[in-house]
Length: 164
Image (tube, rainbow, N blue to C red; front, side, top):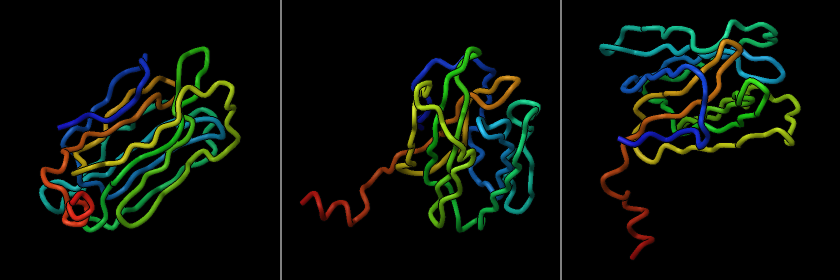
């Protein structure tokens, strides 16, 4: 199992959903400058929908609530991308896009980003099997996000042919 995530030193409270890989919905609360909170709806036991606790802040200044509905079980997470921007209180997630095998959802918080205070852009691709999200949050929003993955044990036939 590999942890793919932030390349800076987050200061917030950690959250970890390792092993929670069957996602049916993602709920995002955001403003023009940051992601305030994220909730996930997971499938457990084959057909039971279980909601995560709210991850992130209270949502003061929230201007948008978005819901992503995945076509579970045939649709699954293949990557996440976005940006983290700095502030006096520390970094925060300023935009996020979820990538699946069927679609791209986002970017959320597509407002103007002040590149002079940008901490990092990120584009993480699941190179194997997705095994859940992790990250950090503060009272005013999401600070960081990453995911767990299990690498492929064998290259797909198409990749092996290229190497020969």
